[in-house]
Length: 155
Length: 190
Image (cartoon, rainbow over all chains, first blue to last red; front, side, top):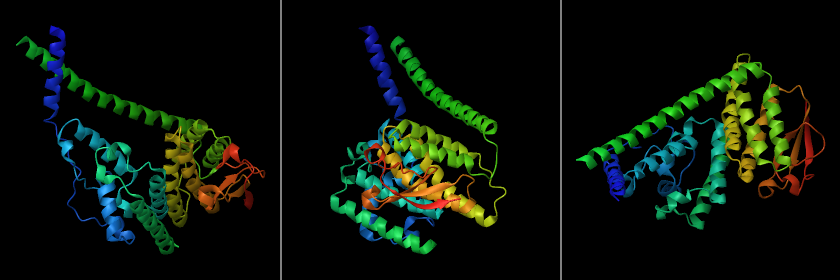
């Protein structure tokens, strides 16, 4: 019995201690010369959808939900941001080669259609990141227009 | 007091375990990098030949024709290695630019195929884009091995997709065993 108490207390101490660890936040106030909006036309409604459902992990600016102030949630979030940005960063889209820009656009369409994005583990808590069918088709339309405009631009 | 010491020791242990873990993955990553390098220098002569890249691509294609996601992943990883051993030095500046564009894209598709065992539909999406890259690569740098450009009209909601093959017979990598002979030869590359 005494042993269990000690272990529980130990866990409590760990939980308290890790609250003092604050990893660097994904926030950049800098101008974004390579942002996707500089490369292809970006209607406001599309921008709004991308912002609420995608940019937390796929841009240089994350809107941190309240629960990420509690560890280890911040670590989980950070892990998602790092892997998300590596895969696709809307703010760095202009640095991709023309071919890769096309592939990324197509992958956006595919992942929306397959329902793999936004991640279900993310929408579980971020309910407003769940996209309606209308919003999905808005993005898919925009992707198709963007692909066409890029094809014209580079060929 | 005793409890406090215990719990402190416990939390220190936890933190130490965390940082230790970080170190371990780092060493693992470095040793992996070195071993890949060693393999590259042993097995593949550095050269401007696209043979190694194409060989791994055809392996990948053949894995998809029999719906084998594991072999596809292995071939995808092999392709990443083949790309790494490709020497750009003898390319002209124009070729270099076109190659870099292809490489940047193709390498990522190969990586994704390698990382997605168990999700052959996703692997095939990347294979579609990768096949276009390979077509352009052969157009850019040529091939010693004659290749056929095949076209599948049904894949991707009837938008269609191409693939490269070493045989004239159609073996469809997009539909696999479900419709093995669907498709036509569009072009021959020599």
